[in-house]
Length: 233
Image (cartoon, rainbow, N blue to C red):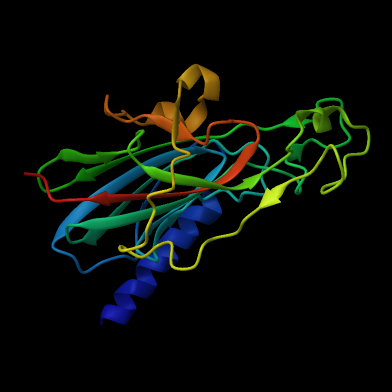
């Protein structure tokens, strides 16, 4: 019976993703079940994010990262037990490892990122976690390392000035006991600097929720972030 329920939930999430369009608030029920508490995770990213409970996927942005302008928001409910180890992959759109978008067009440019999240305990109605400067984040893809690449007539990834860094995901980074003490790239940015729009405006954000990214909104293309959510006192 449990396998049938999981299949139904996965199918519902798939159908929601298929029907999603840019700028919407997409509401789903996650296949993550079995805990004592029901949570609602709401997130918005420029352009894409995936959220995990440990190494189990909770929700993935309904609009593919290959979409240049993806500003929808995601809201999903799932069941879990305190404490929660939440892990996030955050990506800004880039056409390739140059880090650029609209390559070859008059508006060829570096994109900029941004992410915000809040987690609500549906039993109490309290917001128990928000994105903020206390999260542990690290940048694993940076490009271009020289911003003059943006003006290149024929930008080539890995060739100056379009060099890049791609560190990949550290082994075991989603484990609760992973040492993230050196993950200090977490930076709070203003809504104006990120240029929030579309799905962002369809969520009533808690005042504690902050927009985070790496130190450089343009050069930092992919981040990994971790936060542990303990039971409220």
